[in-house]
Image (cartoon, rainbow, N blue to C red; front, side, top):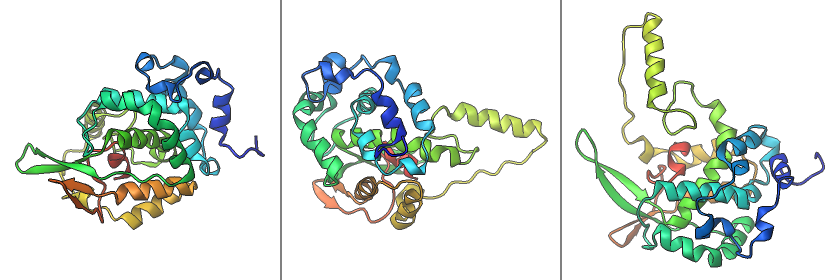
Length: 259
């Protein structure tokens, strides 16, 4: 194992049955007849068990894992279940699913050789409960798929080090857990609550500071470049491109994790 050029979780996966060898499609996980048939052996808990053993020494070849068939199955199923509208290219989830078998070989090659460049997102404004609007950036379906795969792989490297008081957008955590934690504090005798919000935090994250923190645990330079490109991919507002010089644009799978 120590002499291998692949992370140990990739090698462990190769010991499982190679399901893709029996299919003719270049990306069988995206075909309609397989969209709802993700094997239990490739379920999120099983994948998490493999990734939980990851450490920084494994992080030089993460793009191989991100583009692997079994991980893309999981990422694609998540993108489909989240639904959502089309990005600036106007391609829906169902339409992209039909196109992907033809697109995948070239897309995978660009991801592995580090030449893939994300597209800008589509601006969408939604009302806030207290008034005003929250500005979102809706990526194309293709970029949502790639971001989701990146998120699945990076979460075990970073999530264990996040605050125990953080419950949003994290595996096996929710508002219910936050409520239980508050109840525990009350039972411990605490009586004062301070309610604070960081104004426009998602919009003001410094890209350089963020990438330095990501690079502490991720050694795959291709992945670091790709994340940087997502941060700077910009947004289309009424057909006009606007660059993104700061912030982690809300609307894509990676945004809450990076923030």
